[in-house]
Image (cartoon, rainbow, N blue to C red; front, side, top):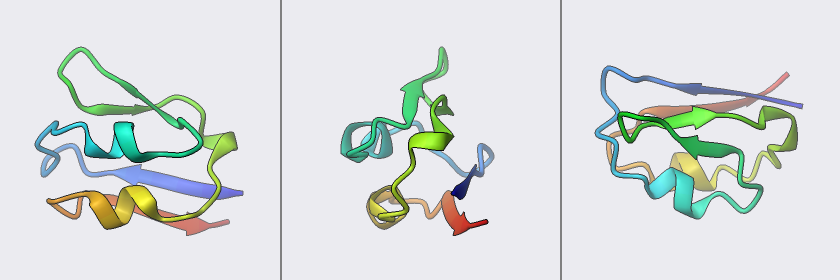
Length: 62
């Protein structure tokens, strides 16, 4: 199981994490920022972390 954290203060709502997640963990919020809707489906692949241009996402195993 993985814990996903998004720093909404630094997130620029580019949507790259939403589009790149193979497990479709994120939905797009009203402000365009990612909403963690299915954390239990996270594969821990770190794709979202790697593609985030602002470094706003962390994923850690719990």
